[in-house]
Length: 503
Ligand SMILES: [Zn+2]
Image 1 (cartoon, rainbow, N blue to C red):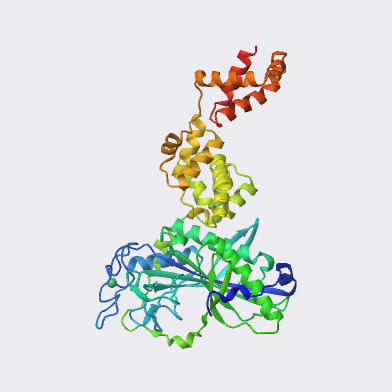
Image 2 (tube, rainbow, N blue to C red; image 1 turned 120 degrees about the vertical axis):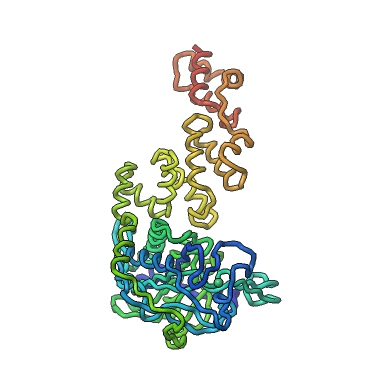
């Protein structure tokens, strides 16, 4: 099916979906670890190198090459498992997952099958002030594939391309796949809970320091499994798996869309096809991918070239001691330190801005100022351009500097918004943008005095009122001065000058 067919797909109105069906979700999140070397060889993992320069016989799957497990990757996997309240296996093996794909040079992926390193955990997710427990089935270790580049087509997809290139630099980079149990009973909150789960998992990964955790660069990728069943039946319907949903916003939208699409298929009397689907960020729909194989089609078997992984209990306890503060305790501590209301804290978390606000405050901004810029100005711009707030391209250091400029009196809030425009346009640092765009506030009496004289001359009636003691009328003259000076006048000094001149 081509990407063009989806415009005809029917969906059911949201309220009708909820009246007739209950959703069940399953979320699979892949986290690319930030180890310096690959999972089973010593090749470097830096992003953005020339294609096929970070490869060796092992990650290219050449005959006779022998893999060796990366201890740091196992350590990160255990720490992720512990942070998700999982059991850690005393003994587990890797398994070969057999399938052919051009960007997978070995024709199998080294993964874990029935013996994951971590299993049976949970994470509490906060949505609109309520806590929802998401149960974790497993977190297992595996390796990434290479990347195919399809050249000549319009969309970058293989369809219509003249030829394809493969880059194996990514092949063999360690991944942790975190799989939830079916998430039931979420009803109308399903999209929000899915988004909150991925957002809080991302925060946890950041706190653990085990990954760059950049959704926009694919170092965290979410697959969304979804099914519907008749309302209150408690049954599980046939599921679809929407692959590689690359932003928090898209996770929410993809769940909502698939619920509406499933409902349309079920209402028509047809059956849901168990398949993978592609998410289209631009149109907000999913399209059919391939029919989903059952596990036995992969002919999993234990990897014969690798020794089992048997982490000692002492090592596991040592790693447990390195875990960051649990998310809920951290939230309580930050809320107390920042003096945020419950609603302010909830909005900050909900916008995916907790870490950004925290860093901005660490750079010297007052908590309420940091919150204000991220939740009003940055959230709006991220929403306008359809990206997550963390992917906007403005950093906490920059926001803290803009706020410092406001506090120094160099700019005001209105001018600060223009500085943010400049930051998004890549015009340099906040100070460079203030200089280049001429945004600094004028408090020099010479320039201000001339503008005040003009305002008085143009508004004789207002000036008379002020002379008669109606000081409140000064606002109209201040407005006229601000307009003449394009908002860059020191309002307090303007007011003083007006009152002096009309005394
Ligand atoms: Zn290698």
